[in-house]
Image (cartoon, rainbow, N blue to C red; front, top):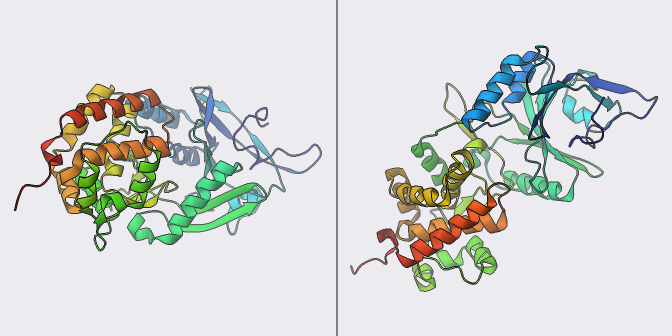
Length: 382
């Protein structure tokens, strides 16, 4: 039986009314901090593939996922409890889960519930084909905030070539009353633990538009940021300096982090997932600075003071300097970092370690505004 109305996918896979036909799916529920994290099918091979939906980053999380993968199917598997989903046979979502050529009773899938604290949480389904291999990723939701995220991502995927985004192709969208979903091709590969900085720089360079040059102050996302910034925020470079600097506009991913990458074994092809925050007209370097902070604060659990030192060292690395120079922003590097972190903090408030984020922003402003780095100095004569 389904849990007592508490499962986040309940509206997509409703329980049958008494006396009506049902389809039953045997599986296991994995929780994290008491919240549903994954529902994995009973078949061991499918279960292990579903576990890869969870992009474990910390050593503890990776070991836990490995242990669960090994223990699937064993009596009393740690961290798992048996959960058979009993779903109404006429549920509108079942045909989408079945895909082409399969009846609802042949459906094979796994579920990743995502972050329960995120506004507009979407439920991610891994759909398997008749060969028991992953066939598609389906993101679905029943809340207006989830609808907005789905619509934003589908609009961006339709507006740009998938080769530029490095995104899995969009296969279709679906709607039934308040239920909405998008279907993407499955992106094979692993979540990289320590991707090379040259790989990151190559990805980000593909999101620049060097054919266009405009002042920083004229960038659409910069204007949005300025309108929302607290009045006491100051950047290392003056407004007049920012009005002079010509830059290549950047497509900003908005949630660029290792857990949103997949690298295929053998080919090395890299996929970039979850584009719902993607926006045109941003500043090069915003995504990369966010990446560094997310890894430092969430994975390595660094203090704001340690994070600040890491950002200063990161700005001096050759791959980073090369990317910022190519984008025309190396001379305002610290302003790039600080403005990018404020952009993410204000438009996409962190759901974890928000206090550390706020402390880091204030510490960076105080340190960098008082002591601009050499990279932020105006160019000399000639």
